[in-house]
Image (cartoon, rainbow, N blue to C red):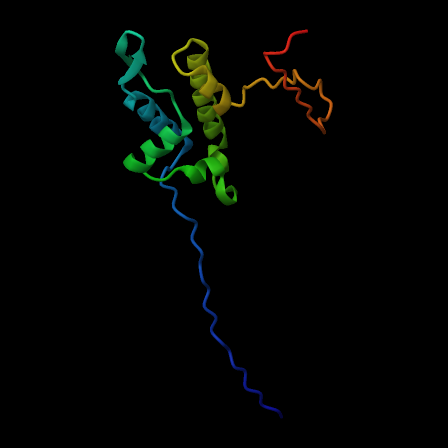
Length: 154
């Protein structure tokens, strides 16, 4: 009879715990957005005019950067929620999209009524109209310049 020794190795199971979400629910993220909007107070802006310096008070526009900075200072970093890192934040996708659209709406409407600089608003929201008025869509390979002197008579 053959006796075999069995060596049983104890294996250690390493549990990888899911990273704790600092913002527990999408509703909590939306509450933070509401707090951010309420935190925006009118600020004095000084503009140079022909008559001198003029002070105006404006409420700053909603911005994604402003919301992220507000959350970082008051709560925690939120970029993972909007980036949906490793698809761990799928439950937050709808509220993140809504927040982005509210920010965009505020910027566009503010630009349209002149509350914010329309040119910057257009650039931030990819609203610039691109029109080719020089080459009519044709590729330009060569540019010719004719210099005409103002002293010559025809």
